Length: 116
Image 1: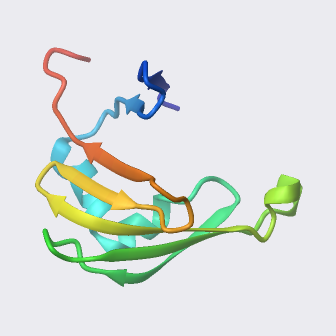
Image 2 (image 1 turned 45 degrees about the vertical axis):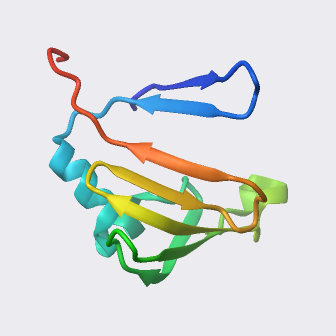
């Protein structure tokens, strides 16, 4: 499993999560922007994800719902999380989480040259 690094800004208003994958930028983009691939990996273990609308264009929407199906996760069992894509430009995705006020998430895909 790839390690995820977390950095919190000084003003505590931004959280940066960074993860390196041994995959091409093209394949990472496909995993996020193709419905069938997105539904296979996006939810954490023990959760399912269902896309309600999937239009990954710059002005499109991606609306999804995640649900905890694992009774072993205790208080999380049966909980639901949702998200809505706000914009998708090549190598960058921004979306909001309607159930979490004032949360905007931006994903950027970049190449790490020279890394093995």
